[in-house]
Length: 155
Image (cartoon, rainbow, N blue to C red; front, side, top):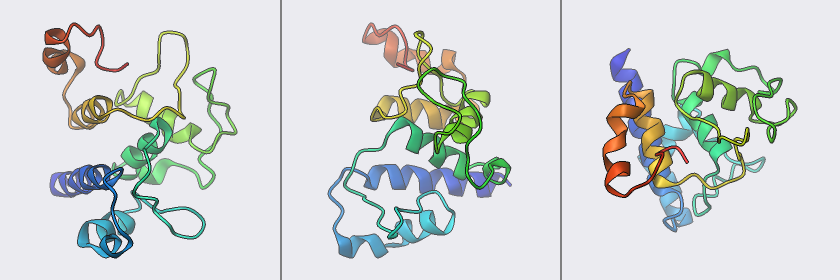
């Protein structure tokens, strides 16, 4: 089981590293892309286009995290039905993914009661989320934030 989780996380990290790097159409058939497609971490739009040159939103990243975890089978087909944050309606396509990521303490909302699902996830947020998924807590992640005088790695 640990090997499968590690493989999923490596595929997820590889997918995130591909996004926003100007991947050409020819490069989308690489083993990494095929792996993340096969694992359901990235599925693409209705045409199957992965849009690998675009930014990743917090909602999309929550979906990728759940898809790479053992919770992937616990999400319903429409993935809606939960509203934990004022800016995430229960009918929002990623509401159940967001709920799962928050329930597992991989991701957090903001102090104003929002999740900001449309915001681009920062590299720091993505790394903190993956490390939390691996079992590290916020105290273990605070070192780099303290050096830069940031009050929270999550925001």
